[in-house]
Image 1 (cartoon, one colour):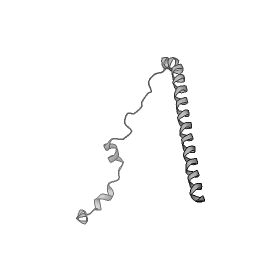
Image 2 (cartoon, rainbow, N blue to C red):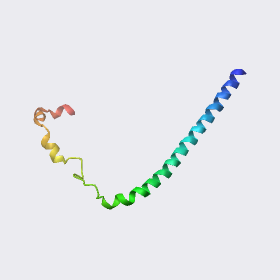
Image 3 (cartoon, one colour):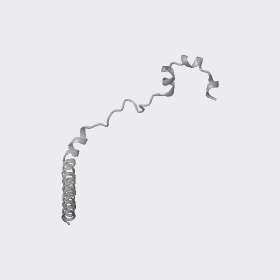
Image 4 (cartoon, rainbow, N blue to C red):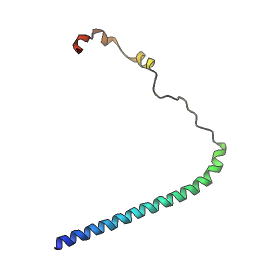
Length: 86
């Protein structure tokens, strides 16, 4: 009986701690959202005037297939016997 009561008290205690933690995280999220919206309003007006869009050097980071074939060493494929793959 004592073990059952002890276990019940632990379950209730951990539930209360969990709810308190969720309340704490929610409060932090709301405060961060409020403070970030105030900062964004203050900082966006002067910062957007002198900024230009970012300069992109290369649109594609994947090289062309022709470049890949030029770099490959195909001399090992000369001795390949295709009958082995049947």
